[in-house]
Length: 251
Length: 313
Image (cartoon, rainbow over all chains, first blue to last red; front, side, top):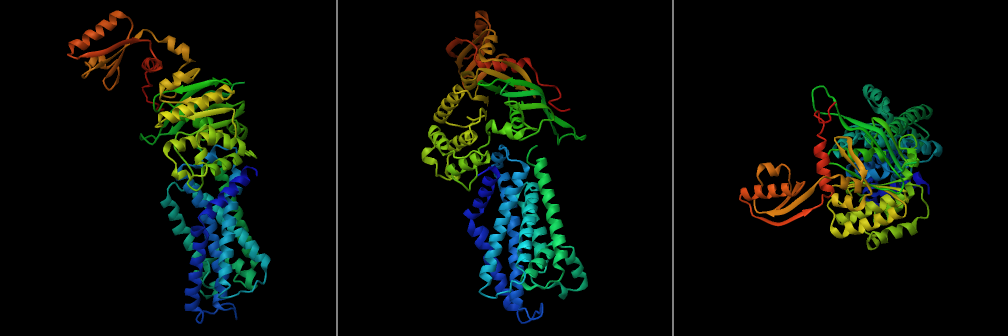
């Protein structure tokens, strides 16, 4: 194994060691959403034609969990290592900014995909959404996980304390993932909130991912791909530039 | 080619104090070459800039001016080669609570791209008395054991240059001896060692050459023997049963009841003893000895008063 491969392996092993917290917990949370919202709203909410509400919910919940966990992985690993002080072991190595980027974002993608697949897996007991366009689903899953992994790197580098990280998580990531159309089609919203949703990049990730299942979406998948691809590239460059400059790492 | 080279290294930090912002000059034009195979000591009071110098050497901080290289590799422009040549034992007892000792060593080895390193990892664990802790989680280790792991982590990629930043702070006698035996053995095998410590007797016993820093400047740089012989006069050591008179207290090294006073010749010794008697003190265990490194250190520090600005620029 070369240096960055070892770091990637270590980062994956880190979350696997505490799987109850990093994999099983998020899957259970998503399952509870599915049970409660599915049960309460199944007969009240109409979405895409004859698609059942529970089936509609499944891909959205899987993608939401994927995004949140990809973010959590890189951000929590960096902030914990910074607060514990053990990031120094990594700073002393010949690993370059690019190596750090690939390893941290790579491990975030792995965790995002594992949790996302886990949510899909357990949801199959309740509803089986069709997989109309699997390539679209895979593309949005990978891009979304990379985007959130890179955003986690930015947040992990910026935060100096756990409460700053919690603020980022609670006031940015949570609202944006919740208000992204996981639980509804944005066409059911009043015009104002539709407009707000259109500036939320999370909406395009969820909508594009859902297109992969139903072949129907609020926006054209190509347009969503453009938005999500652009955002991933932008945040990726931002995270890499921070690593490269040694932002809050090397004084 | 020197193993470590500092050329006119300065480092300023933004200072939070003062209305104009301003900056604090932690290092002020330090130039220093350490040759391959040396056991070199970097001494100085707290805040002298020792750790700043080491963090710049290790690439953890960037110098504001000047150049630093390890085995000829610039620590900024050729950082990968410089870091491969360097093993650093950090001052803080830091660890990753997710993994055990062997895993931590494997990861560190891997980050440096060293493959099939199990034999060397076993040897390190054995030499540092960690063999029975190889599978213990880092959290479960005592402070002394964690310190040994830090040493092992620094050496896992077999660097030719080893830097120890106060490795024996708060460490028991047994570990100190194991550690120094091991480091001295590595030095004999050709490794260059750079040590910072507050224990001057350790520096005197181990280091072939010493630099003393004060407020970011090198104020003494010589072989340990030359520094020792540069000290003038002798030292009067005795035990007293009360507080020293003010005049003597200003010159004395006091450790509990033990008092050590510089004494150029017999006349000065007599004067000191008279003053002590006149102060009503009972003097016991009187001894005259040659100055040690601590005496030299105090002499050098007194000869070089800190900058009046305290480093502010």
